[in-house]
Length: 289
Image (tube, rainbow, N blue to C red):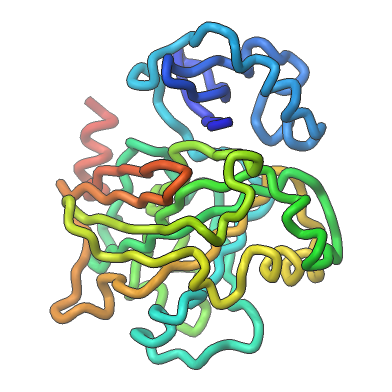
């Protein structure tokens, strides 16, 4: 299944994305008003049972939200592809490099990624997100994939100068609306081996990043095992697995996203996360209008 969170008719919901449109599950499954609530109850089968119903909305008529709008935790993994390690000059780390994002730093597919007024160094980072479907603590590598509900595209948009104020990445990764998550989650039954997929990022139609998911330094089971050691992973939590080489900061000259650009992250078997880029002032004026 492709599962998206969305806004339609002034209400937030979630549902199944089909060729015919979007089936509104939030309206039908009253006990599970959000995707996170559904995952917490382990009720993906209840959602799957709606797959044959008629779509409520055309995809173009809904506003896509971040796939999980209200995660308890978002863990992002730094420099987790060999090509990105090489371009950034970092040695291979002995353990995953982890920082966190806040939910309000994310937008959904098709929504503007916002370049804040404080910086012009707005960089793209095409990544794969792992959505946790089953709670667990100290999860073994062997059991890890059994805790995954699905996968989505992610753009870990980075305000590079703020990221580098200190050795801690959080300020440059948490400006409001700078990351993108979506356009939907594809459940694991559709992708039994995520390592066989590929990822690519395009800026204004030009490919700027590309790699197989198998190039991850720490793969999905390793990340789940590590993160679940220091905290309990809960349904709806998100692990954003890192970006490959080709980011704008290490190009000559640097390549920054700017107002009017369009950025896409595509993962085979999942889809394309496409977002326009807007300056903060422009975005505010648009909202006010």
